[in-house]
Image (cartoon, rainbow, N blue to C red):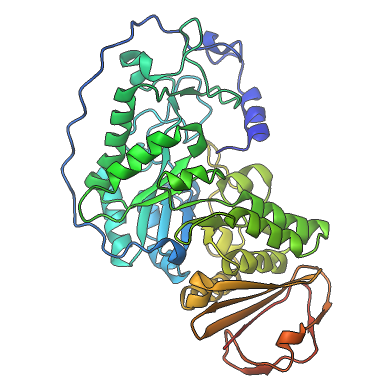
Length: 468
């Protein structure tokens, strides 16, 4: 979902002469077509390839978000395929592709979330064969691939606008409307009271599972679509034989998890990180955010944890600026990746790319992959340690109270990992809790033996990882 204020500003800067129908930002797209009869369900597509047998269970997921336009000089699916080895080296096992579909021209602002055709690939990105090849190569590296899915709205020149106007939400005068309260003038809201729309949307999702062998979906603005539709869609997708389907909701509504989603977005945790790292709030701000997000969740449901994504990077700032420098952003990533939930890395984050990256068509910064090799090495070290230690993926959590240090233990069976992260851009003398004093550990990354005394000095934004 796009940052609302920045998105509205983007719209206001559009040339006033685009089309006469755009003169009034409140103007609706008028249709005079009669409401059509219910249509027959689309013929089910054939199946390409063998279902991927190593889709990770939710607590084991480590996700990578790909901004296709910025990812390579070509800005296409082939450019992503060429870097799959680099993604795999990070410890990633799920690749999320931002929307790959053709986008609208009417009232357009260049957003990839203004979908013109749910069953096609944007010419800029390549062909169905290109997507199949990318998915095949990812599967060979034990990485699942999920697509971004935009179910709330379409572009104004989607064929459904004229062929099936009753598939869209309308005002009292029969005019198709934008999603209420969003300011998204480039898209038209869909009407999920219409059963034919539901069936066609589900068939469109099945198309990519069967035709391209993808492994699931990240569902944009998921709370803008009825929960019962998601249950219907997810139940249908998971009824496809021999398929493990990942379903990820861009939402904080926990009710969506009961509809079948595996995970949801963790905005509250991100806010807690910013409060502690930037505003001097105690570590309890992060703990409270974690507890709030996980309250009431069953053990198989999880929250995506991140220090940046396409919205934050495009509309706010980069991780190094958000968390003050490289050391601050790495410290924040350690907390987000180790405390619990599903860690996310966004395109260019792993090399500390210094510029904000747009995801709209136009002048998109291309990521320079040659910079900051030390960043990449550190991300590989941190994330692979998580992937190789069950305690950090599935273990129980114990927090230790501190103002300036995020201190917690994760335990699974006889494996325990202790994480200490200095939240401040200054040295901190950490008073070791009584329960941890005089305990023996191994340093997580080197294996060196360590005995915790009564206090421990941590350099600015330093993190230490101990294991036993």
